[in-house]
Length: 631
Ligand SMILES: [Zn+2]
Image (cartoon, rainbow, N blue to C red; front, top):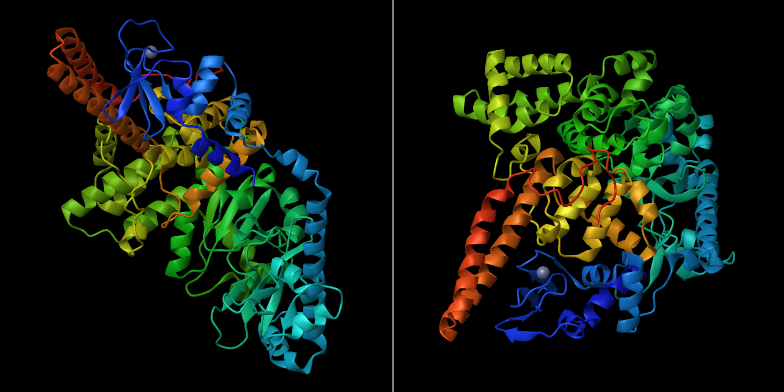
C-alpha cells in the first residue's frame, strides 16, 4: 500500500549516511557532529542522532529528519523530496491516482456493492415469505413498523442457519472469497471454514448517501450476543463514516438545513414513518466528524437525540467535541477566523441536545407522541447549557470539590464563549449550579487567564466520574500533537504560533502543519493538497486519535497547548542532555575553548526555558494575521 512506502524509505535511508554524504561527520559518543550545512561556522554545532534519525544544530536551531534535510538543503517540497529519497532507497512509489483509475479496483467495489444489494433482496424476501421469519414479522409488528416503511428501508430476515446465505449465493455465481470480502460470510480463524455472518437476525441494510447497500446492521431475535451486529470493515463499508438513513434523509436535511442524529436504526425508521425525514442514526455511540463531513455545509442546526440512559448521555458529551470541530470547519461561517466567535456561533447556537422524557428512546417516543416531536426539538438544550448542567450536577458540595469543578469543568468552556451576553448567561448558570456568587465565577476566569495551567487539565466531566479510563499518555508526543491538530484544526491553527518549528522533527508532520495552515485550517481542504503517500499518513494520524480509549480529548483549546508544551519540554531536555555530554567530553579532553563553548550553550538553553510560554516563537504563521505562506 502507498502509505507504507514512506515507512520503507525511513527504514532504508540512514540519516547518518544521508547527511554524511555531503557533510563530514565524526562520531561523538552516541551521536555524530559536523559543520552545519545551514549556517556558516568554524566549530561544529550540528549534531546527527542515529537513534532518533534526526538532527539538530545548536548554532542556528535547524532540526528535522531525512525529509526535512532534503527539503531544506535542496529547496524541494515534500513530494519531490520523497521522490528523491525513494530513488535513493530503491523504493517504487505507487501513485494512488493510478490505482484509483485502476479498473480492477472499481470492478471490486461494484461487485461488493452488488453482492450486498443481492443479499438485501434475499433477506427482504425471506422476511415476508419464510415461515421461519414469523417471529421477526411479529416483532416488527409489535414495534409498530408498517409494511411500506419496512420496504422503504429494505428490512429483511437472516435465517437461523450457518449456510443458508452461503449455499444460496454459491449456487448463483459467487465465490466464498468474495462473500467474505463483502462481509456476508465469516471465516473461522484456524479451520478457514466459512459460514453465514448473520443468523436469526432482523437485517437493516446500510446504504451510502447514493442509496447503494454497503453493509448491514442486524438485530438479534433471541438472546444472542451481541444484540446488534454490524458488517465488518470492508473496502466499501466503514461504520465510522456512515450515517444510517442518510440516503433517505439527504433531501430533507438540505431543505430544512437541520439534521437530527439518533442512536438506533429503529429510532430513525420510526421518525421517517411519521414523516420526520431529516433523522439519521449514528452507527456507534459517538458521532464522528467523518460521518458529518459530507453534509455539514448544508446544516444550520444539528440535534443530538440519544437514549435517555446514562450511556446515552455519556456518548452525547463525548460526541460534542467531535461535532463542534466538524462544524468549526464550515466555510459558510460568516465570521472572521476568530476561534471564539466561531466556537460560540457553532456550539452556542447550532448544536442542540434533545432530552426525551425519562426512560424513553426516540422510537418509543415518536410512536406514542409523534405530534410532540417538533416540541421536543424546540425545547432541545443548547450544547453549553446541556454540558454545564450535566457536568456540574453531581459535584460534591464541599468547597474543594466545587472549586475544582469550577476550575476544571466550567471555566474551560466559559473561556470559549465570545459573546458577552451569552457569557453573562452562562456565568450566571455556572454560579447557580455551583452555589457561587456570579463575581466569584468571573474572578476565577480572570485568574485562569493570567496563569496558564502548566499541567494537563482534562475536563473532569462525567466520563471520568463514571470510571471510563483516562487516555493513556501518548507514546510519541510529536505524533500525538499532530493528530490532535488534525482532528481539531481550528483550535490547532490558533495554537500553532506557540509551536516552535524546530521542535517538530518529522518532515511529514511539518508538511502537514504547513499545508493545514495554507488550507485555511480545514482538514479536508488540506488532504486535497497532499501527495498520495502523505494523504494516507495524514488519514491514519487523524484516525488514530479516535481509536484512543476514552475518545477524542476535550477541550482541544486546552489539550493542544498542553501537548505543545510537553513537546517543547521533551525537545529541550534532549538538547540539554546533548550539551551536558559535550561538556563532559570537553572537560576530559582538556580543551578550554570547547569547555567554554559548551558552557555558553548550556546557559543559552537555560535561558530558553522561559520561552515555553505561549506566543513566543512564531515559526508557524498565525492565521489571525493576514500573511500566508510558511517555510
Ligand atoms: Zn546551523
